[in-house]
Image 1: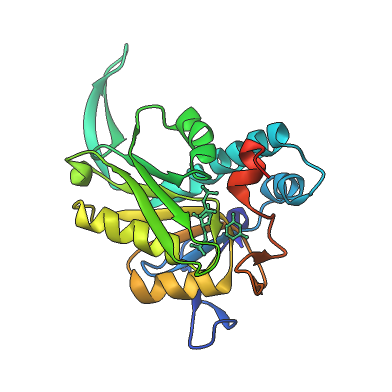
Image 2: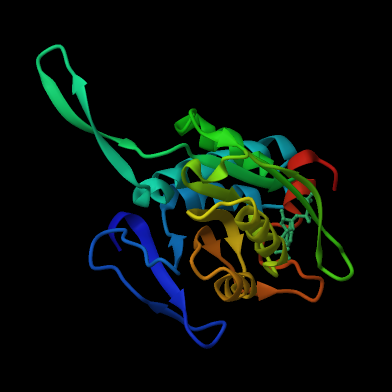
Length: 237
Ligand code: PRP
Ligand code: URA
């Protein structure tokens, strides 16, 4: 696959992944999921999956993976032409159209922000706070701080873990209610169950995942996964 990126869509069965595209390198389907298959990302994922990795290294690697993923996630952003006066003559250039808003889902999504802003420092940051009830696995929303003109450009939702998909689905509903229309989501580790949930609830949102794992366990944790991302990131295990 060009650039080490595979484009997949889920058909009837949760575990049936079929290659849906692309006719051009890295073209993604509107309702698709893009799984990264890149040695550098895989290497850093091995670090954060390792239970021996402490919170300092965990945070650094998680942020770096998010930064590496941005290059591919932004490939489909709308652009506009502008004329720029170079020291020699006028050049027709392209710039990203509108204002990008990155929205981390607290807590764990916060850890992806620095890596993303490193390559997109002009982006705005909205915040959504959601905590998953450990018994019911239902998300509880405790913070909603988004720009009033969120639809002034593309919105990128970020959360390292897509498990049941309950939190991401609720976050996407909050973004829609705030007026967002052009939305993508970045996660690090996705479970098939979470992808199926998002494709049912929010079929127009493309999901970019660094890895697609096997399944959820009886406690709703991703297998093999990396444990509780928020706790590992902040040392609150
Ligand atoms: C984690 C993770 C996601 C959610 C995924 O957050 O960061 O938001 O769980 O699970 P789901 O797909 O089943 O909803 P958590 O609720 O543990 O909060 P935290 O980041 O504050 O630890
Ligand atoms: N949330 C996490 O942080 N990890 C999981 O495996 C599932 C949900």
